[in-house]
Length: 577
Ligand code: PEP
Ligand code: MG
Image 1 (cartoon, rainbow, N blue to C red):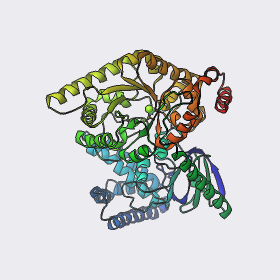
Image 2: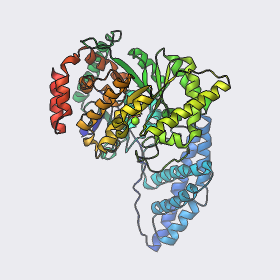
Image 3: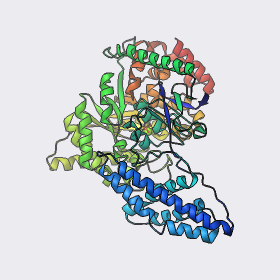
C-alpha cells in the first residue's frame, strides 16, 4: 500500500483499476553506436515497424460494428504512412549514416517530416503532422517496450470503472473519457482551476492532479482509491483501508440525499434577499443534473466543447441544433457564451490563427472571434436562431476594452438584420452581456455596464490575470488565491458597477460553487451565482442560513487583509458566525 498526494478535484471517492496512459512525450534515449552495432540496430527498428503494423491490423480487426466510420480510415491511413520510405527508410539511413540508435533516428526523421507538413498551405495536409506524431509515438513505445495505452480515436477498449493515470489530460481528452464510463483520473501535471479540472467536476469525476511521478509509482491494473476532496491516492489499499473508503463513499451518497430536500426551497437568505443560483454546463447531457437541482437557469454554457474532438468545425446548422436542444430542454434563461478557444483549450482541426503556443495571453476568446468573423458569424447566427425557442442571452468572453464590445454589438446588429431579411425568426430583444475576467475590464466595469445588458464575473481567469498565475501551471498553483484582496476589490467594483447601471451581475467562476466563499460573495453584494450543478445544493444550504446584514464588517476586514494568511483567518471568522 502506498499513499500519494496532489491537488484534489471534486469531493467524491473513486475506487477502481489503473489504466496507465502513455506519456505524450516519450523520453527516448540518444546513443552513439559503434559500427558493428548498426546491423542489429536496424534489425531492431524493422522489428518495431512490423510490431506496429500488427497492432494496427489487430485494431482494424477488433473495431466494433458501431465504431465511427472515420476510425477504420484513420487506422488504414496510419498503416500506409508506416510503409512510407520517407519515415522508415530515411530513419534507417540516419541509423546507418550517423551511428545513432533507432529511437533517436526516428525522432530526427519525424521532426523533419513534421516541419514539412507544418509549412503546407493546405489545412488538411498541415493536419498530417498529428498523424506523424501518433505513428512516431507508437513506434517509440514498441522500440522501448513501453506497455501503456493511449486515448485516441483508435482506443476501443472497455474503460468502464477504470482510473486513468497520465502525465496530463487535455480538456478534450477529459470530454472523451466522459462517454467511456471512466470513474476518475490522476495526472502528474495540472491544477484545480484548469479547464480539465472544471470538466472533471461537471462529470462528477473525483480526480487528483499535480501528482508528480504518478506513472512511476502506479502500474496498469493496480487497485487505486482516489480521494478527490483531500487530493490523496492510495495504491493497492489494504482491505481495511478499502472498507474505510467504501464507508466514506456511502456517507457522501447519504449527504447528497439529505441535500435533495432543499431542491424545492425558495433560494433566499435569512434576511429575505432573493439569490439566484444558476448552473454552468458544457453540453446538453448536463441538463438533467441542472433540472434535478432546480437551478434558476444556465448562467454559463461553454460552447467551445461543441468544437472539440472533431475533425472540422461544426456548421451553423450543427450549432443551431445543439443550442436549440439546450434552449428547448429547459424553461429558464440560458446564457450562451461565444467561442472561448485558445490557451489551454485547443481544437483538433485547423482554425484561423491556431497557435502552437498555449499562452493564456494570446489570441483567445473574443479576440480570435473578432479577427475571424467567418468563425464568429455562424455561431452568432446559430445562437440568434435558437433564441426563437426560449430565453437566451449572448455572453462574450474575455472582453478587455470598450472597442471590442462596440465591434461585437455591431456584428450582432448586422447578423440580426440579415436574419430578418431572410425571414428567419430570432428574439429581437436578446440580451448581450460580457464576461469580466480581465483586470482592465474589472477596473472599467462602470463603462462596460453602460453598454451591456448584464455582466458575468469569470473569476477563474480574473484571478489568473490579476495575480499573473497561469491557471494550468501547478508550479504556481499555490499563489492562486480567490480571496487575495486585489481580486476581492475587483469583484466588489464589478458588482457595484452593475448595481449602479441597474443590470444583473453574476459570478460563474469555480469560486461560485465553493461553499467556503458563499458568505464572502454574499457580503460583497453578489445576488447571482452560476456553478456546476453538483455544488448548487451545498451553496443553497449556505444561502438559506445566511444573514447578510451581519457580514459587512468581516468582508471589509478580509478585503483589507495584509496577507493571504490573515485573509484566511478572517474568512474563517466570517464562516463561523
Ligand atoms: C472563468 O474564467 O471564470 C470562466 C467561468 O470561464 P472559463 O473557466 O471557461 O475560462
Ligand atoms: Mg474564463
